Image (cartoon, rainbow, N blue to C red; front, side, top):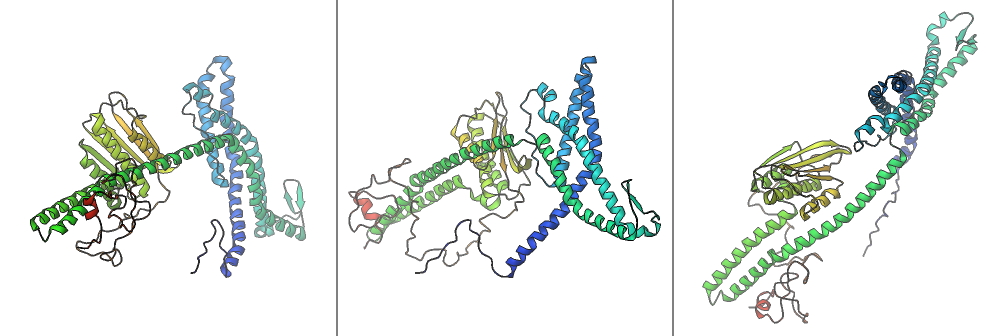
Length: 533
């Protein structure tokens, strides 16, 4: 027997052939070219800093004037609010300018939404930090911008010297209003130095702009301490959500096991017993055998209905086949309360997100029918832009009496766990007198392609499944280990009492987990497969 050796997780697979060597040689050159091109963006940042520094002077000068006029006439209090707002806007624009031209990530500052109004107007940390940045940028930006512009202009003028060589004065060229260069050797050397300087200027600009990036992160962005606190809180939330998801999955598994045990399995046991008795009576009492076959037929149809209910509790087929719009429309059609459904250009998204959105609407409409006393409900689904990218917004509103407590009820708790498992957000608003609004925001993956349902097209009527999809006649497929219901668990006892001790040579019962009692002759007689006539 051959043994297949699996590669270790995380280990890099060796690459052979010329492609590996070519990539290794080409990657540094591409990186250097990319850095050199990005250096021109940094040079653009330095040159444009001359103009932004002039605008910064206006911003912080107005703040200084407003503060200075407070003791004199008190009008400075009124002027301080718009000037601080202006500095905040300038700081916001400057943060985006630095990030766009350097390629660095500068996280926006924390929101002040929960602060009192007076504190947001006069003590907003972001606005005052923006004032400090504008003051520093006035001097640093003007100085570095002037130097960068002067060096760039001189390099371009010297490199263009062959174009106007005939117009060079006899006494040479004066540089920086102080140095004179005369003679052909000196001019050629100067031209080569200008070329080297121009080629090195992007790299020098990239190093210089790191000061701008540091100032922007320090005064215009989110501090490292804030980022660490937010990441720690996010880790705690995800850890709690993971534990809740594990508990929710286990509870769902037990529910499915209980539903299968109490419903379809009991029907299948009854079918097996009816067919077994009909098989015994078909020669001696055909009428009784026909009644038993009819009874088995009825039980089979009831088992099919119960299996559909169980499957609908997992993922409804219409959701897998036709998507969220059709599934929600079918859900609204079954609701006793009239429901208006509006699904706007959602298409096919991640199956997990679709299933969670479906169950959010299902639970919400169930609560509307049971508790709200509403005359009408609305379901609104669409894709919006959230703080972390695109998200699926699901909103269910009813005109009922309101007053619902979102902390009570296992249904909302389960929905909160489902939504939290994918880092979503669930909010319930239900004031006394209504209306009640349940809003879920489910994050979507960026650039997610719309795809058909996972089940694919339906087979035409009367077509046979492909060869190998069904076991051969007479063979009994083996159930996966652990899938059968366990005796003694919550959710119903076995159909024939507690399990008895295994007897040597005894065959297995027809249904896993439904072992008949040894003293029950009826069950023993009609649930033994392969029994001779």
